[in-house]
Image (cartoon, rainbow, N blue to C red; front, side, top):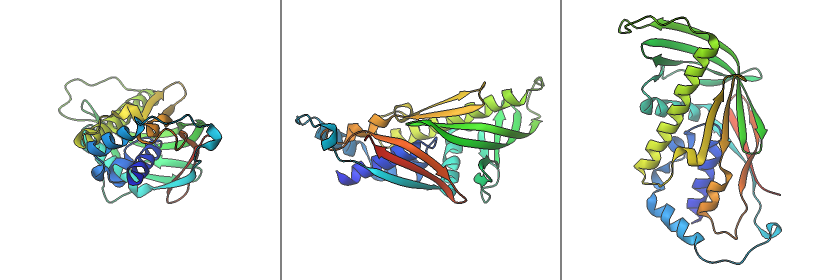
Length: 244
C-alpha cells in the first residue's frame, strides 16, 4: 500500500508540470488495475472522522529533469502524429535566462509544417494552478507538396493556438493510452485539466488535488496540493504540501 501511494503521489505531482512525464519515467508499468482496486477497497473501510490537525502533513519538493520532459515529449509524439521531435539527440526544453524555451519540434497542421521556438514564462496562479505564458514565438513555416490549397497567412497568435491545441491533445492522448494500457480506470482529465487562453497567451494546467485521496485511507492524510514551482539549468522543481 505504501509503494502504491508513493507512486500515485509522484504521478499527480509530475502531471502538474503539464503532461505525461510520470507516465514514462516513474514507471507506471508496476502500477495496474489490481493495485487501484486494492487501494480503493481500503478506503471503503468505515473510519471515524478525524480533525484536520490530526492528519499527517507532507511538505516535499520533487525535481523533474529536462531530460525526463524530453522523454515525455517523445512519448507524446507517438500518440499525436502531428507532433515530431526533429533531432532526438538535441534538447527540447531548456532554461534560457529567466525563461524556458521549447524548440526542436515540428507540428504538421494539414500539410502546413510549423517549426516553432517558444519562449515561456511559467508561474503559479494559485494553489494547484500552473500557468505558462508565451513571451515570444519564432516560427519557420512551409507548405508540404501534398497540401491541396494554400492557406491564408496566419498571425503569430493563430499559430500559437494551433501549437497549443496539438500539445494539449498530445498530453491527453499519451496519458490516456498509458492508463488504458495498465487497465487503470481513470482519464487524463481526471488528473489534470489543460486549457489555452489565447487572449492572455497563456497555457493553464489545473491539478486535481483530490485524486490521491482516492487511493489513501480517509483518516491518514489531507489533500496534497501544488504550492510552489521553480526551475534551473537542469530541470523543474515542484513543491507539494498538504493543507495547513
